[in-house]
Amino acid sequence: MKIDYKNKLNKEQYICVTAGEGPVYILAGAGSGKTRVLTYRTAWLIEKGSSPNRIMLLTFTNKAAREMLERVEALTELNLSNLWGGTFHHIGNLILRRTGRAFGFSTDYMIMDEGDAISLLDECKKELKLPKEKKFPKAKVLKTIISTSNNSLQDIPTTVSLKFPSLLEFIQEIVNIEKKYIEIKKKENLMDFDDLLYYWWKILCKGDLPYKFDHILIDEYQDTNLLQAKIVDAMTEQVGNITVVGDDAQSIYSFRGADYRNIRDFPLRYTDTKIYKLETNYRSSPQILHLANEIIERSDARFKKRLIPVMNDGDTPTVVATGDTFVQARFVVYKIQELVGQGASYSDIGILYRAHYQSAELEIQLSKTEIPYIVRSGARFFERAHIKDVLSYLRVLSNPRDWISFRRLLKIEEGIGDVTAQKIYEGVSSTKHPLKYLTSSLSKIPEKAVSGTKHAAMILKGIKKLSPANAVKFIIESGYDEYLELSYPDATDRKEDIRILIDFAGNYNSLSRFISEVTLSEPVTGEDSYLINSSNDRVVLSTIHRAKGLEWDILFLIYACDGGLPIARSYESEEQFEEERRLFYVAVTRAKRELFITYPLRSSRRSLYLAASPFLRELDDGAYKMMWV
Image (cartoon, rainbow, N blue to C red; front, top):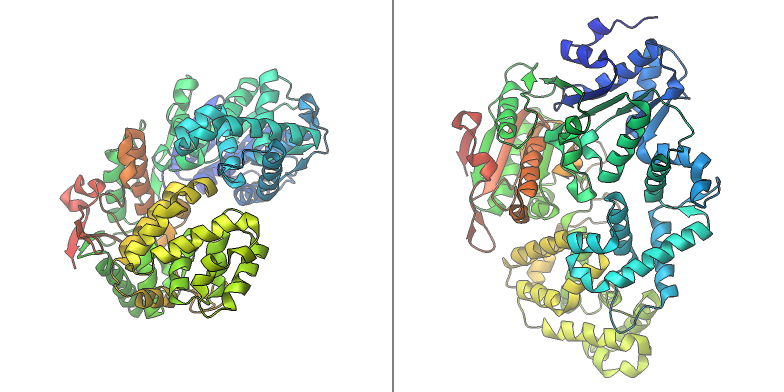
């Protein structure tokens, strides 16, 4: 049965689906049906005579690949199990099962998951017998450095200099660890996820690809990193026919290695590229799209487009300037209650923010009003590991017999693991003066743990008479800052969280009151206990990064202030600043019917006055209506 493409697709989509051979670049605006285009183009290629086993469909998630292949099978009424569809890593694995011998691997190599890879790096550290006199980055950080190096095709010294400057003193040791890591992987016939891409590219460089393809189609091309783009370029040299679908205005994942230049410069690398645009938007109201178009019109995007609405008129987006960050949180909660009272469901509502820390006050307000919600962007603010680490010192100060917090702060120290921490706590719990025990009974503590125990005792003694905010500062300045650098690849973001914790704690003079407020905002029992009911009817909180591909009838974008969106460090380069603008655009285009953009006029904790985001200030007056609360 032939597919009636003209009736199934709008005019823009039809032109893209039936584009001829050679390089095809489809610039797909938000909500324009790009998945539909890829699905129908794949079916059209098969209908025109391309064999499914000579078509490669590359996606960024297995779910997206499955959905597309199922749709193509439904359209063509064919079994397409031989079509090469999946993520870059999935396709790389299929190819290397046949070609891996060229690099010293047998075809039955094992693929390590992230946990296995980190464990192996720990073994490499032990084998190299690193100097004990200096602390060294943890295996998780090393894995991120090596992965970043592979995916950006840079050596370790360059990667550390550009991305991890605080670890420059460890460059030679990291180079040695990478060498040992590669050596063991080959010896034990192991590959990690990065190897699946790296060796696929190396096979292509040698011209040894044993499979022939007629067409390559790539989804979300703006999210490719340099290595993935090199793979695509090398594949296209052999194939000739490539279709890339993406949106330069939605390139927001540079922190994962995505390179904006891949999509921006595609027509420069392929000079005979045919460029098509999908601008008809099926998601948002005309007023929301007007605001979105105004945002992206001022960007550095090489290929301009304007989203065209299908939906009928809606409300003009509202920008709300609030007295401070707590007023901002109270406004959002009040508005949610009002909207639900008017018939909206909690699940119709999304709340987006640029960074994790910006959810802190809002989470407390939502908990107080028992509005059901889920944090899609990870753990709740006060449940994040680094926040719990810092709070553990204050909890012990408030209650020295808090064994969970006592063991937690001890395990931060070098030389103290689960067993040793438990032994120390058993001694602490048997005395009338728990904190004195840490310094007066060192002879009862294992030798390797003495230094760490002294350090923990020093911190507890140092914060004893300080306010909550100054206590957190003291903890950070007494070594926790260095601990973050050595323990987490995203140490910069975690430091920002802790800066917000310091500001938040500045509202409290009493340690007990501060601890009580934090405790009341936390889950009572078990995973997901902060979901007030067990249904799916709940508000979603998310970073903008984690919200891409999602949509809500009613959307709140909070902290749209200078330093909030864009974040302060984005001013370091024009590229970073422009990516923040794209983040703003992505956030706005998640809204379907109603959009509220809020920003505080003042930081409630530091008397710091804040300006509206420059991305708001540059817009025409008619793009939104203004409120002050």
